[in-house]
Image (cartoon, rainbow, N blue to C red; front, top):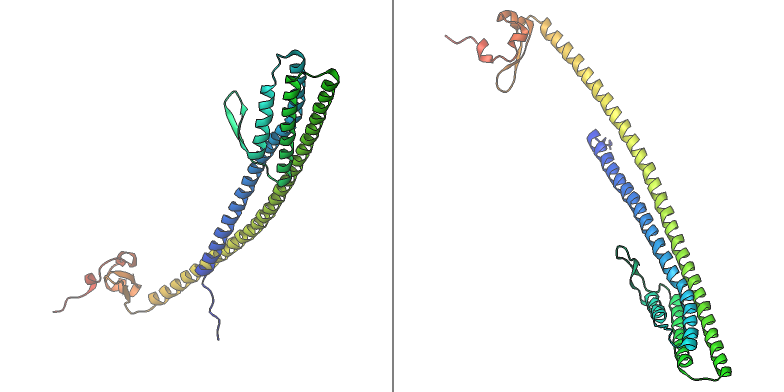
Length: 287
């Protein structure tokens, strides 16, 4: 069975489709890599904010402890603002919510809920310590204790503060490890997408070169065909002009498309003038 060769039109259209598909995939991969990068930058900024919130618990609890000691000594100090900020920050880290990050333009950011079970348990542990501290600190501030008992209560509150700060440090480490692992995954995705985009770029370049070679070949073949056709027409015209018989060719509308020299001599007209003239002009009417 003789194989049927593919026509240049079919081959070129197939190459064109491949180029379109590769270009679409290349652009999709490129935009995907850009999107992953932008998302990664935003995540890093948000992760830094969350880690800062977790780290602020240490400062807030230490300030809370100082407020309690001042309230015990002077009776007019108030720890409500610090206590409220502590409770709200822990709830934000646990459940997530919008918080203001710029008082100048009312810009807010949504803090996500605790991302892992370990982080969730660490926050809940801090909440339990805070509940104990609040109960004991209220009794410490409002009660009338002897000096030894007062000293023991203060030491107990300080121990709770130290435990709270230790848990806050552990929470910061957990958030930092989680953020680093997430950043590592993002980098891996970027590398994978970059490799895919690179491979698509190589394939796209090869297809473009192949398309250029096919186009150059097609142009060369067309030029050769046109040259062969012109030479054939010249030989054909030479043969027709060499004969002594009058020869004319006409189109579907009976207009002259070719007239050899013998016919032009017969009708007393030049070859160029005859072209495009109606055939009826050269026919002798019947008597």
